[in-house]
Every structure is written in C-alpha cells, then in structure tokens.
Length: 176
Image (cartoon, rainbow, N blue to C red; front, top):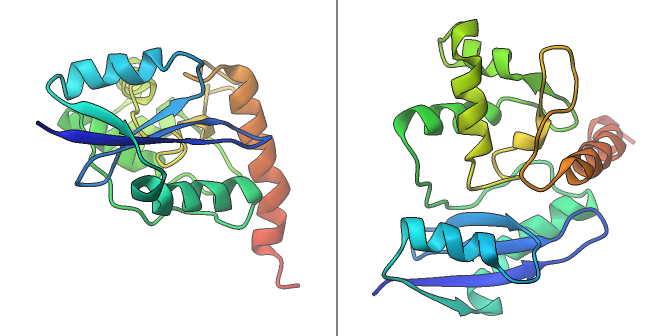
C-alpha cells in the first residue's frame, strides 16, 4: 500500500495542503476545511493509498512554500511526482517559462508547446487540471486580453498570488 504524507501551509497570501509521495510532491490543494479535494484526488490517482499527516516528511516542501509566501523564494527546487497525460505535462512544463511576477496567456502556452490557437481550450483544460499549483504557476495564466480567468483556488487567491509576486518581483530584480 502506498503512503501519502500531508501537511498544511498557512499564510496571509495563500493557505493549502501539500501531499507528498515517496517520489516527491504530488498534489497541492487550496485550503478547505474538509480535505474533500485532497481525498478526491487521492481516490482518483492513488485509490489504494493511505494519507498520513506528517510534518517532518513534508517539511522540506513546506519550507520552500513558506519561503515563496514570504517573498524570499522565486522558483522551486523540489522533487515532484507528476501525474498527467503527456499533453498535460507539456502544458505544465510550459508554465514554468512564465517569469515570477509576470503573466502569459493560454495562447502563449499553446505556442510554447508547438500548437496554434485551436489548442487554447485544450491548454486551458490542462492548466485547470494542474495538480501542483504554485509550483507549476497556473495563477500566472490569463486570458488573451489579459483578463483574469478561472483558478482552482478562486479568483481572489489568484489575485493575491499575482499581487504577492508583483510586490516581490521588484526585490528580486533589484541589486540593492
């Protein structure tokens, strides 16, 4: 039986749960009281697993999230256990090209993976199924006109994450 480890990250910017397998971070959930999205994800991808709260096992992952939320980390360096189709993984990897504090459109992502405008809906579907929110920065994806579009954690969380990055992007680029 596979064991998955879970712990919570709490900040003024964003709160959620991190789920870790033996291979690495496998799911990032926006905060909910009842863990319903964590359990739904677990049942779909690891139906024979057990979920254990373990602060120590999740600590290195939580540390990088906390650094990100404090504005001192601008990219993640964590092992991941990414579950998805090849197309989804291509889209998720393309999201890593979006610089901290900036945004890109679904069409940009389509072009980055060698597709045209006809693929934007499929790209949007892959973005919406991203299991590692923040690591693969789906909050940085916007509509072609720059409009804020759906986000699994709600638009208020998307806005908070974008504002957080804008605030700290200046610090990241400043030599002083």
